[in-house]
Length: 437
Image (cartoon, rainbow, N blue to C red; front, side, top):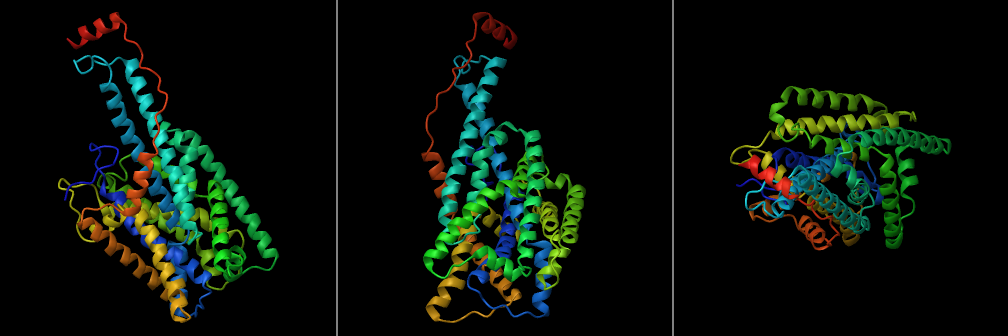
């Protein structure tokens, strides 16, 4: 099987590590999302020892870890796309200059001009992609208000220029501020809810979900919740995670994990450990213990460390690119899912909706599931997407939603006013000719 390449050109190899990580990440996403569906359908959840054990595992290693991991991989993908687009665009602009085909070397001013034009093109590409993602997310929110495609699209639209021009210092300041603001807002909101007597997980879920007794109320509430979540995402861990992933694209930590085994192993085990310790208070509350308000923002921040741990370990497992591009074991189906992450993510929603909404409506059967059994359903849903993506991989087909997004981005491109290349003076041309001769 040939190595997959970026749509920005055939020169850039698509490394296996991010794809494999995305594939396994979608399992974590399914496990994190299934409580939404049991909450919407008010599925009764018997509590036993198995459920309690699973709640501890999910709280310490899945909840609050899967979506920061998603954001990091999204940022990594955006920055990789930008880097390749700028490199390919710079070459294209330089080759279009008069005399270059005849062997004339471009001047330093021409090289700067070409790179600037390519950078503007990359920024516009990220912004167009982000705008379409917002639309995709809005449609998805009609069924699943927890959609993150729109939130990631909004971040891409706002920070396209920072990513294209690598304003990492600005990003670091913004991320610090957003984490502090997010922690303060979370603490204040939780304090208010606790003062109103809403101290259990069921109370919190009910207070957040509101009334969804009819289809219209379900859809309207879903869109409202989605819009609020997309806006508040700017002061959550989503932004820091996205910028961290984008910054990693300028290193070879993820592209070539085989070169950094000790570092990644330390980050993997240490990150998961810190995330687990920071989530103990949340786990106690989730399993029926008392709520200590500060443990929730602490658990959220610790979740970013846990996400870093997952990314490091998944990158180690995936390994670096091989000469023939072949993947073995679970890496192969995981990579097939990772290459079609949007299709897999949206397919999960359709499958969950079929199980928790459509099936009970058609059969009249009321589901009585515990936490562990719903987790089993999540695993089955993920396995169905694995089969779907594997079949698409064998047939040589991209994911349908990836194809739709790519087509929309390409066809919505518009011509822009472009600064002309710097004029080459005869003296400069003669000097270049002498140097090249």
